[in-house]
Image (cartoon, rainbow, N blue to C red; front, top):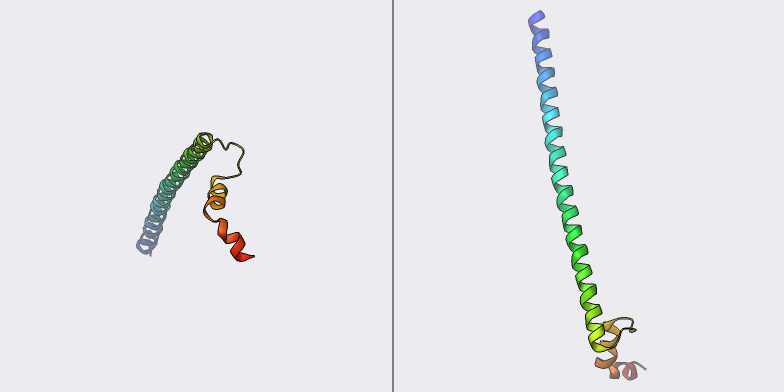
Length: 87
């Protein structure tokens, strides 16, 4: 019976090592995914900042620093008939 108990103990040790390795692999994968997500969020933030700067530059060039948004100015110029058609 002692040999059987030794096998059981070895299986338990093997299972513990297997689970520890599996958890370590999962942790490293989650860490890599987390870093990737953070990197993409930072990149998006930079792109948004660049877009805001471009919009502000366009507003300055057009002389409309006080306008609410460029799309509002474009709609009012492009669709003057839509207001009379809907009324």
